[in-house]
Length: 269
Image (cartoon, rainbow, N blue to C red):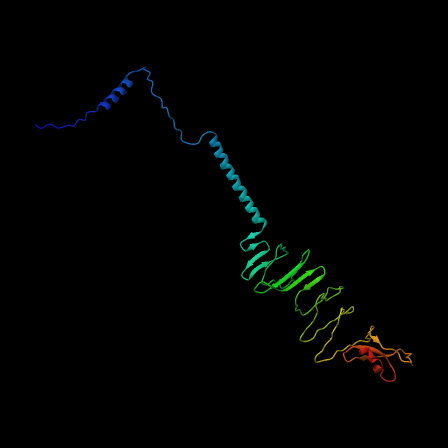
């Protein structure tokens, strides 16, 4: 007969001691065994005042985040931000469109500014309104300045009409230089309810190259013309004739039966 072979593992010395100790501890009742205490205890986590400071810091960050979010919403609402622009300013395919009244605190640079078809363009300022035209090099080629004294043009200006407000005087003045008005088809000066005055410190020249100078009025007054000496016979009717010097100077001469201009021709000298 053949027997079955069984493999038996025998415990080692340390395992035997452990089994005896556990058996002794289990079978012996009422025995107080003092176990050794751990000398080093490691706690995982944040405790005490550090934990409270961390919670306070997280709460402060949350408050700042909510305040910033509220301020952002408020700014978007006040400034009227929208996908198409901000406030009265709209971004279109042709440029920027500004509706209503706006205030510019700094210089405005634009290629073209125009109003709507059914309204006029109004520029207002508490002091002066200055418009500069510059070339490609940045030099000022033309300037328009509007202040309490009127409009100042540093260079030439081209316009089909110059008109003052109702019941106000229109004055064209050049304090340091000459003033000229040119037009290919004529210059018309009209005063419907007043008079026209031309004042100059030096000369006022009316010149026509292909035409003539016409003074069409009921009365033409030349109060400061030089008057020649009266003849011996005198003139009780105070009639005078206008004489012209070769250089164009006018003077008065007492009228007689014939011309008397030659008698006072010394005025031309």
